[in-house]
Structures are given as C-alpha cells and as structure tokens.
Amino acid sequence: EHLVRAAPVEMPELLETGVVDAALVEAIDLPRLGPEFTILPAGAWSMARSSLSVRLFAHVHPEAISTVYADDNSRQAAALLRIVWGLEYGREVEIIPYAPEEGDPPANAQATIIVGDRAVADPPIGFDYQIDIVNRWYRHTGLPLPWAMWVCRTGAATAELRGRLELSAKQGQSCGRALASYIAPDHRWPVDLATREIADNGQYHICRCVLDALDELTHLAALYGVLPDGPCCHRSQGA
Image (cartoon, rainbow, N blue to C red; front, side):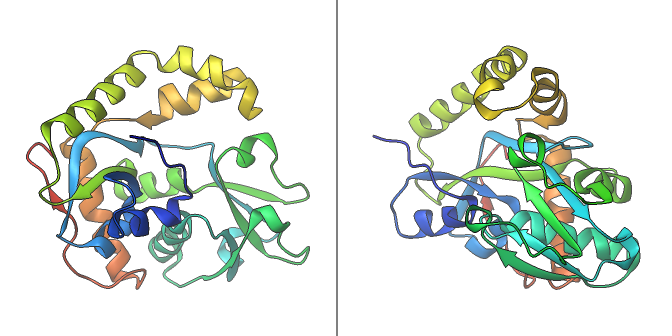
C-alpha cells in the first residue's frame, strides 16, 4: 500500500489504468469518468463561500477580459472561470493553458488564474484586479463549490477502503486549526490566512448541499460547453 502524489489533471487516468484504487478527483472530471466509477461518501473538498487559493489576476477590468492563462495542472479552475463568466457576463472567455513551473504567462496577458499555494505565497505582481472566483460562483448559485471527491471503480468500494477514508476525513476536520498552524510555514502562508482557508472556507464532508452543488456544476458545465452532457459517476450509498 502506498500513496501516489500527482497533479489533479492526472487523477482520472490513474484510476482508469488501475494505478490507484481510489483518487481525489476534481468535480469537473467526474462526468468524464462516467458511471463505471463511484463517488465515495468518505470525505470531500468543497469551498463554502470564498477561497484564497483560487484567484484570477487581471490587467483589465473583469468585464473586458477575453483571454485567460490557466494552470494546466487543473481543469477545474479553467472550467469554473468559463461557467462564472457565462453566468455573469453572458459570454465565453478563451482559456490558454500554461505550465507555471516553466515560467509566468507573457507580460501582455490580460489575466491569469492562480491555483494553490502560489495564490497566497507567491502571487503575481503588477495586476490591477484580483478576483475570488469561488465567491463569484457562490453569488450566482448560493451553493458551495465542490472541488474534489474520493472516487473508486464501481464495485471496489470495500468497507475497509471507505472506513480508512472516512477516518482520515474525521481526523482532519477535528484538528483543522491546529493543522493550519502546523503546515502554514512550510507552504509560506501566514498562519491566519491558512486557518481561514482550511478551517473556515473549506468543507470536508459530503452532504445534501454539496451534492446539489455538484449537480449544478455539472449542469452549468454542459450548458456553457465546458464538457458534454452525460452521466456522472455513480454515487455510493450515503453520497
């Protein structure tokens, strides 16, 4: 038994090829997997009303944005932006993938989405606007944003696997503030911001509200052409 660390965009393939038994899959990728895979009721990651780690930085007013550079390690952020811009401005925005580890977007880029630690620890400089995309989602839908859920192949959701993931989720939730204080220095976050993101903004269980939000995300993604309409992952009892 071992833990495989990989970029979010790689998780579906790791599941499909059998490299891992379960993976934390971005919500936008769940319909791509289809009903042969199952969402486990064993912890998840959602954002309540806001997020410090999913930010749009722009040189131009948000209404004037037509192209955005997006981290190619995550499909969720780019999909979320396309949905929010469709809801807010009724139009499409072009997404240009780029690899942050290979350098910054060009200096003349209108805007860029930053996901993860870098949004706080090493944000880009010289941008006139910084936008909380998760909060824009909440303002339009009144729902939390489901970001990632545990998934396994349908039929492989053993009691042992579910039990381990459920225990891990409960233990993490019970010490969120202590965990934030512990990991903040290594990730170059101020402790107060790490506490807000982990203990206040984050939600780590699957409830009716999160499932409703997942349905809405899937519906809007199809509506705005982010992904084809089709069956999502099977939901295990309790999810």
